[in-house]
Image (spheres, helix red, strand yellow):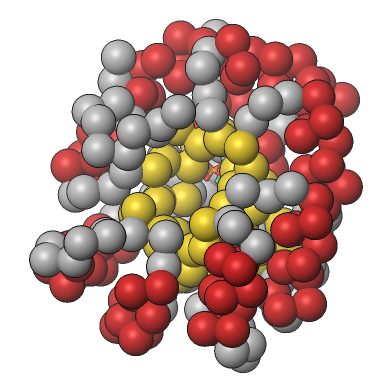
Amino acid sequence: MIDFNKKINPVFPSILSTNFFDLENKLIQFEEAGIDFIHLDVMDGNFVTNISFGPSILKAIKSRFPFKIDAHLMVEHPKEVIPWFIEAGADWISFHIETDDNILENIRMIKKAGKKAGIALNPDTKIEKVFSVLDELDYILFMSVFPGYGGQSFISSVLDKIKTLNKKIENMNNRPIIQIDGGVNLSNIKDIREKGINSFVVGTYLFNSDNISKTINKLKGV
Ligand code: DX5
Ligand code: ZN
């Protein structure tokens, strides 16, 4: 199991950019490379213009592989779909703070089901928006690209927000895990790591790689 305080970078593959005909083969390679979590980008065509997948793919992965599933809900009404993902077996569930839902109610619904609850923030959303619920959160997902598509470039100004957050949480007993999502690759992961991030979502860079296992090891820094 991942120790989020260790030196190794925990890599969470996002399957958004995969060729779905080849998904099983890729998942086998992730398992062999020691991956613990798969990141699922759920898009509803409303919160973002893209549509991706729902809980049935989560169930299918869980039925065949031992991975934990980190469901990132890019949906307009998380309250309505969180129960689906709980039921399908998600282990971590994050939803966006930019939605009109009652944030605290959603966090509590996730935690009541024994899952880890996260808040996701778009690159242009102020970090101060999460301050009132910090004590309740297991993790915070910083989008380092605008949500909707894989393969975009990392927006480095997001790192300033992370600096502000780190100051705010430095004296907390149960500090939330900080996750970064979008545009992560081998040339920027070291700099990002130094800003205090302890969970790295990687999609396109991993799926474009010729040797997944080697690339994962390089990304992990081992
Ligand atoms: C974008 C998604 C990301 C994205 C990451 O909306 O949340 O998870 O797929 O993929 P890359 O690494 O391609 O930016
Ligand atoms: Zn994501």
